[in-house]
Length: 236
Image (tube, rainbow, N blue to C red; front, side, top):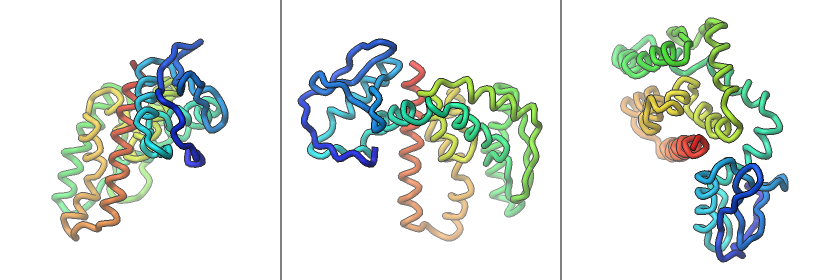
């Protein structure tokens, strides 16, 4: 949506039931994606959230204030046509999951990782049927192919409108397990984000905060929380 150069021309954005879903219409006009497909959403909750974004625009349209609409565009224009490729890319995170790579020192950081991440790996073993191995340092940790296969199958079980925000949960956190924990309601989104930041927060405590890095982290956190909200809406 970065190529949009729209100014508000409509009075009201409204949701209309259509064949195979719901559409957002601007004074009755059909909204289209950047690839010119109809912006058709699978349920009313997503469509109403998108309509709220359109109604909130003043003057020039700012796509960065429209996360639901941007996710819908991505689902329609990118994920649906390339579902297998996207699913494969996301499932591959299981082989290099953040939670599996642990510090060797100092003891306090080791303990924080254990306390925060071990319960999630136990949850993944029980709920997802995937026991992932951990290792110290940055050397590659080979995982059980059966465990990776189970994670892959569960990624592919998501429909395109859930896979789209799920991909953001994974890529922003670096963890397939954390993304599933949010998707399954095992961790609140804000708590999951904090768990993904154990290493960074430790470094901040030791060396102080860098303003530019903190601003970038805040943007990513907001995007992570948006992705969690959109995933929830897509499942209603």
